[in-house]
Length: 396
Ligand code: GLU
Image: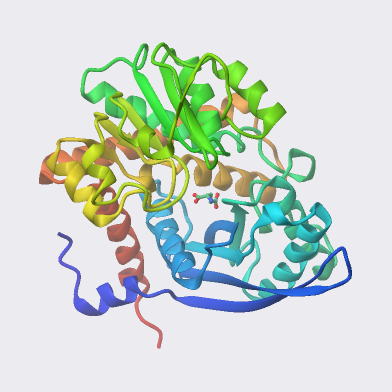
């Protein structure tokens, strides 16, 4: 579509820099265990690497590479002055105490320290990590430099330079892009039915914000199972239930549904907001939603995407739909670098503006070229990176 030459294509398909580290941990019981860690900078042509840090047992170098590449296109689609990066440690955080997670985080940070920094590569939370993880990364980096450097991470607690609105930003972006897609099809968000897979940092706040907007959140799920109520779930009560039990399962005034079953519900909007690859050649056939809005990174496989397109399902792709998180990460980084803090309304307005203008650009290109929103979003992202690469020229 872009007519890139082979050399440029190959350069964009290849990660710029990868660091593999061993992360030894002294466990609370005195024994020691070794984990593998990675930081991949896929591209840094438009600015510092940017992207999350994932703690999950299935993390491997290929997954981190893929996630780093998605960050490159994501940052470019919403026009942030960043490249794309991602980090990961192959660990199940549920099996470790807070103290152990702190030690793992500090050792990992220390091992990858030569390639990160506010002008080099800026981390943020992802699956299995949170604000506290970012505070430990910031502290480890700052202590070893000898002064406080808040711009080395985003998504950190407000008390140490985090931004208002960051915790719900990804979910807000999901709702902004879902509303834009519904609008284009003449569907009102008020009363629209929504099913959300995943009730973590992205899915739970998306459920709350959709409900605030007047939509009917009919089903949600987490790693243990799901719940469904065609009249709409009481999202506030659901939050109370999850706070008490650690799962959406067992929520009263709802029926049980499997994660798989949730994907096949007849709803206006399906939001996969958990792991990669859930909409594949089999599950995509069962999707009866009109819109799929990708809260997760890479929830749809290539085969799944083709099937959804054939069945007329509109897919708002991950690099656009879930970009709200990195947009407010950018705002946090700008605020930290200037040591000047914005108010919550300033942040929400700027986020909304950026999400809407990115959606409008993508949608206009999709219509003009008669391609999917995914192809249009990737075309815009790849084009911006290729242009930066071209203008900078090759060294030497
Ligand atoms: N982990 C999030 C993502 O995949 C946020 C990344 C960031 O804010 O840097 O987009």
